[in-house]
Image (cartoon, rainbow, N blue to C red; front, side, top):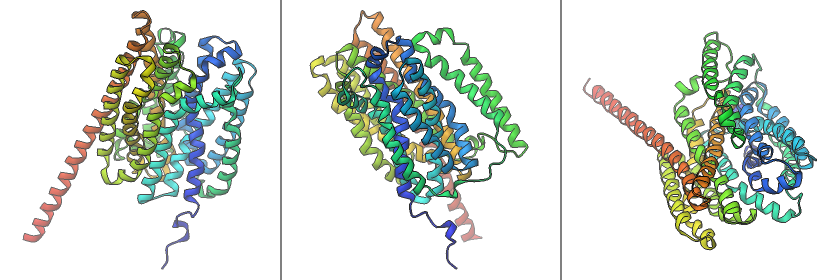
Length: 490
């Protein structure tokens, strides 16, 4: 008897994936693309530096808040419905941000845009779980991971190019307006290509769990979002509040599970799903350094060395190129090499960053852009072998019914790590700058050393997981051999 039609792979799955990845690329690009436009934006709207910073940090804040609840809603209400609704909102608020006449309205539009982007992001990983299986799922996650890594790395480059092409005091508006035509095309194609079989039974939505998790994430991200305006000193008390709220969230989710309800985040993902807890921890720690690097380079190259936004972006292009190539390759190799691939990748990032720090310290400003190319290329190649394979290894064992919330939780960890990095690394830069009498090279080197520490921590996690994987494989082999000998002599 033939295979049921319901189980047949969707013929449009690869085209649907390409459309969802374009939308995901836009939403993630908007995390980092704005950083190069902040000086011109501040001048255009006559805003204070602390207020302008909310154009970046406000987006990251609401993005992080939306991820897990939106992932759960996608699991319950249908990923197609959530994807189309979130993409429509993202396009609308991108247009409003580009047309904003004042800094207040721009920040409001960015907050709403961040919520839409956070609702969009977990649907990508959920749709991959839904549409693909086996080796195809690994390839699809490879492309998804490449999109996550590349979108963050190329943000400064794309932002610099847009500002150079747009020109004028209001050229920054095109950083937001460019999303509108691309988003509309993606919306039309997504409506045609994403299958309607995504809707599940809505059941009970865990509102209390959602509020507790949102409170914990907000308590972590708000002081970091306000870091440039003294938020860490004023709002430090929110960090212990975050710990307490997270503990309440875990207790509540366990209670929901004991009563056979539908938790916002099934904690068995962390305790029983192979590779999920390790991958989530590795991703959060890696993004702490990875995301902060680009703000440090923007500050160092533009404020310290007088580069234009375009020159600043092009100076780090080697990382984006290396990451793009290796991420695509890594998606195909992850099934064969597993966690070894991320160990190799993290080692490459570590070597590349260490050499970059040396270059920053000893190479004169006029020769720096060319001297940075090789070490950043090495770091980029390594980076492409980290994010893409790690997402695949983290999510490949997740049941389809949990795919949205699992992807949302994974990205929440990455967003929290990114928020800490984008506050801590520039903070270290300014601190050293003041202590050394405006020595930009030393300040950049110290800030980049913070990224080295986070990458080293991620490498330790990866090596430990690899060792545990080898021990488990050895035990399995020994048990199989013992069973065979027992049967042969039985």
